[in-house]
Length: 305
Image (cartoon, rainbow, N blue to C red; front, top):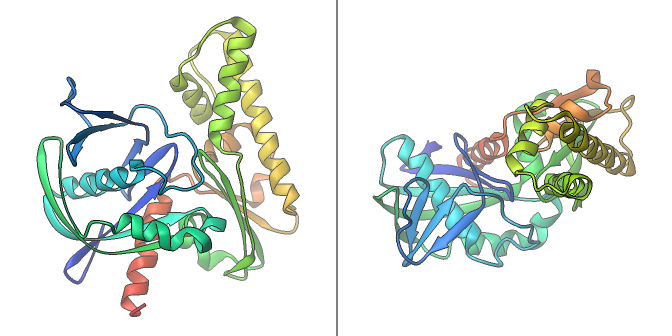
């Protein structure tokens, strides 16, 4: 969260796997209740319903305005950031993003979706929040995640933003984004998770918890039986190979360009991909996009844009 004039800029990265702000990460999966849930935690009360965040992930949808989930997730992200500073009432400017190739066609609809209530009151963790939404800007998410590295991007550079739902690819040549070379592929980390779970089920007749696969992706290992570990690892490696195939489809060449990898799939590529890491930059901060939204937003507002 950054302060500009008399309002607070809050960057929110609306992922299918996690909802990220500059300082917080929470799984995007949401459960809705008509009455107060038994257990406390990440529970938000808004418009007569209780929403619990942090259990599982949200299924992929190509239009984030399709339901209320991402709007309520926005309120959740705002509450998480304000809570860090013990603030319950504020003027807030939302800085958010969309996949690279969706920005042009969906930016205005998503912006209107996030701005539909200029004044909003809700309860988070039994604290009442009164928020005045003063504005909203939408940015390309992959580019925003590497904005802090822009100064070093001489020559040809490829950005690969590997999210839970999609992979977004773009070129930055001599520090300038190339708008004509932006691509989105529906090959997110969730497909890797599904393939690993199905492989274990097919081979051993066992349902495996997402947490185990996530630990293997994150650490390259897990404290489980070798046969299960080998089965899951094989599927993760296959997914990493598919990602490399996608990059090569868009003319990635390790001898001619530097590759910047960001998003939730960074750990997969770090632990399982056969890459020339001498010319690869891993953006391992999962909050990088949300921080980038805030940075770009502050700079734009200072320039009066």
